[in-house]
Length: 478
Image (tube, rainbow, N blue to C red; front, side, top):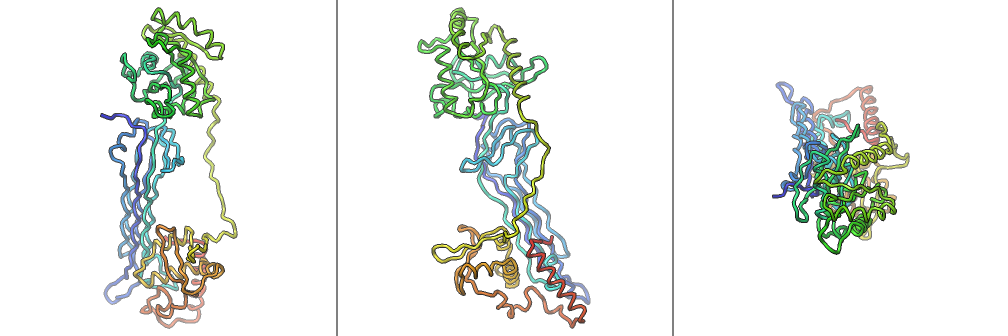
């Protein structure tokens, strides 16, 4: 049965925002008491959070589809819908989040570190929030936005200070078992270790973690054996320890050639050249192993390696090795740049940034792209004429119509708002207010109309002007 998984593909879906409510307050002797439709609730996010108690991605291997809850729709009586509940997924320390193309989205290191993998949709505004001096009783509400949906890849890269690398059966598992309290599986056949093992070592005042990486063989960086599957666990380690078998029974192997082969695989994998190395000649409790270690040690030291002769079985040379590793780990930690306090970077938009683009495609279709236009389209109920009129007014105030005219659009030309796979396409008619006589003033219920004094009309005009300016600046009432 699989007990360790370090790479999974996860299908995440955030919650959809709840729809706003279009409602009119009614009571005795006051049948049209004004709009009172509430806003829809926000959809829940999908959040990845580092949990030190989690050591594998096994749970997501068995259940790769995860979805947060939707926001509830608004209701009459100015009752807003309940927000959807965030879905928090616990991941191991050292998890890397990538997209399907292999681009890194987040590197989660440190307990409590989190990343929003899918953003919940906004709730739609109810007609009470849309009411103004110009729209006293909107007969429509905005729809909730859909939450983000997508596929991500989670890769676990073990967070350890020291990595033990070497051929299968070189004694890595035995070494980690005597240096720490870890109890890996140990046997006298190759590839006993099928998953990385972690142990904690205390040497003086330094406490560090050590990882036993499954055995490497020639061609590991190209996928042979288990090497490629677990080489990623070496990336975060500060120190590499070559564990070389001095008592191997294979006639075509010796410690020096083993070292050269493993180093070639590490170079082929890439990104590990700056890690300090230590060479451990293991199994010196065997007479032939002791003799071979004494023979190859001068050659290894000439190459610049610090060499330690040890026996994991007889507990020989372990104290010197553990303190040498503690010294290197302490130096690596001291060399790391200190974490700075979190800074907020403000990037104001350019003064000439319209917030959208208009491009003409080869087939003559004009395509509008931008955060605001695309969001407004998603929020519009196209079965409601007032809602469509409200969308037209918003696009007009944003300057979409003006840019279409500058781009050469003519009456009857096709215009698409949004990406190719999910766009709203319509035949454009210049001057969107031309059809307003059918709807009156868009979104206004004439049943609330009454003669107004001159002063009131001036105040309403001022309010209309201020509202138009707020919407143009991106103000969204909630």
